[in-house]
Amino acid sequence: MKKIAVKASKPYEVLIEQGIIKNCGKLISDVTKTRFAAIVTDDIVDSIYSDTVISSLEESGFRVVKFVFKNGEPSKCSETLNRIYDFLAENNITRSDCLIALGGGVVGDITGYAAATYLRGLGFIQIPTTLLAQIDSSVGGKTAIDLPCGKNLVGAFKQPELVICDPLTLKTLSPETVSDGMAEAIKYGMIRSSELFGIIASHSIENYFDVIDDIIFRCVSIKRDIVENDEFDKGERMLLNFGHTLGHAVESFYNYTKYTHGNAVAVGMHMITEQAVKHGDCEKSALEKLDAVISSYKLPLVTDAPVSELISLCSNDKKCESSNINAIICSDTGISSIRKMPFDEFRKYMEA
Ligand code: NAD
Ligand code: GLY
Image (cartoon, rainbow, N blue to C red):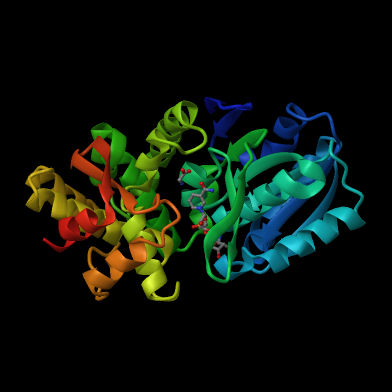
């Protein structure tokens, strides 16, 4: 088993092993005194993994209740959150009990927010089942729900007690959902590790599973380092937004219907890096490598959305500070920096 210790304001471990989900009861019993657990999951994950998780918890002496909601981003909303609160109240969940998020980033984000807020804070365990959730959203404590006017607008920092990451669960994902997660893995390679980038680049959507444990371990290790330095997102953590400000603009331009998050991030990474090459801020060879790896994971490089409109949408991104934008620029694979630019300068940078 690979273990990554995260020394955030609350320390915890990320455990990575194929098949580990079958032992989750014992692992959870090691980090909590309660023997009452509430699982929150979506309908697809429920149909594949709940029985295994519940059996393992019951074998370790837990009483288990379960809340299931419809899969997909539209469920990450106040209506589902209120239903989770009602469910916790109906089941007399107390502060010493724990919530278990079983699923992708949608389940993790909303369950984490419920755990941060119900009774002013419950214990919280993450069992991420998508690549994106295993390498990104389950680690670092960002939790949120969406509002009709924008994504992730209501949230809290809530570090989990434990993250149990079973790469075998990725075997049941659609190839499109794997590609989405791979966009984030490519991001980690670009911002911090040319070695990780090389491992991803020497594989493709067809054979990525041969190196999946290593990819997850390296991505989580990078996220751990960044979160330990900047848990509350005031500086270095912004590097994780490489490709995201433009990516969010692409998602928003198409009303969250045409591009999934990972697909939009792939476009965003290509767009900013192409401009960085034009401005002499990035090696041309790095752009070529980035484009090749994006394509080999069946992710898009370009969008039909007009650049000028995407730039305007970037100003609505919650990562922007007043009239400035924190652009994340990679000068080569594995090397990134944050460049704070007035918004007008960013527009010129992108439209050059
Ligand atoms: P998701 O949770 O919607 O999962 C994608 C689809 O895969 C869903 O239909 C789900 O039912 C299905 N699924 C999940 N696990 C499965 C499995 N093992 N087998 C088969 N199907 C499975 O999407 P996601 O990409 O995991 O997460 C996206 C969300 O994560 C967004 O809401 C985004 O804002 C959030 N996010 C949060 C952070 C953070 O730091 N908190 C970081 C990045 C993204
Ligand atoms: N996914 C971005 C962050 O955790 O900061």
